[in-house]
Image (tube, rainbow, N blue to C red; front, top):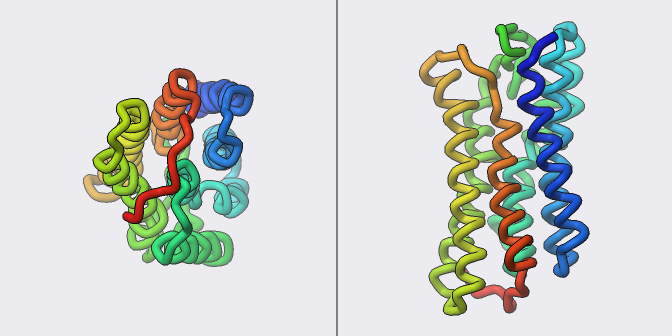
Length: 233
């Protein structure tokens, strides 16, 4: 048995507990549903890691990558969507442009080998995908840019907000996003594909637990206090 599967399994358990509490306690239903979409896609991605780390064949790994693509690739976009919803911000050109990039990334991952190739690298902790020629560009567009946009909106909103309770909520979410992004980028990109270091479990899907915990604190303590119609940022 590969005991490293307990890493994504633990993340799944924590995410499910937190999202259940969120659904029960959240007053702002639109924000709650946006958060549940974000966590739900994360849970599917984590389940895929459990499956792929369990010694399945290369063909099954490749099929799993394609099946999970519509859930894994929109992770950062879903968090950005959550921020837009919470701030009551109208969807703008940036939002729809990034939605198009995510859609293109899903299509490439499902129907081509340009994003991830069919080669499977097996390591003691599980498997590592082999990046295709468009892996890094779409990694930036699909994962990095949406979360940076979300962090920027949270930062600008916290600076504009004069009420201490609202400002605290925004800063908690901002720091959760920063920590999650640093963990995911170091673990999924910098160490393996830039520095060539593979001797560690790939926990980028499980890094979402960090943001879930920060969101949980916001819900448990402040219950998503209602924001006004969003500032123009």
